[in-house]
Image (tube, rainbow, N blue to C red):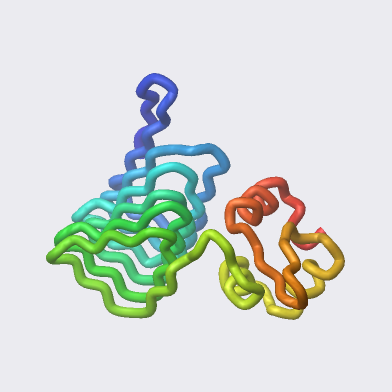
Length: 167
């Protein structure tokens, strides 16, 4: 694993076999070329190279896949599957680009800018009853229209980053 700084840009290259949890609070350009198993929570750009094998739950901003991925992938900005990519599992992208030659087998649910309570529960991986309790008590940023709630995804992301989730 190598960390390089290019101006203020942080680039992290992983060619090793790793297992565990990786979490980044600041944007970084992470490139995985080896094998990884576990959980990835990234900010910035995540590239899974053509030689990589990843079995993980992945949350990130801009995710580019050229290798093999098995698991759940949530891309808050864009998910790109390059030729030769093989993705098996569930994907939750805001925007999706599947290049000819990529293989995807599983379930895809697009993330919208505004989420209803059920979509927010899936997005946060919590029970719907928790979402409704938080919304009705003002703990989660949301907009009530009549008897319905809607939630701005960017406001939710800021709320999560502030550490106020569930408080």
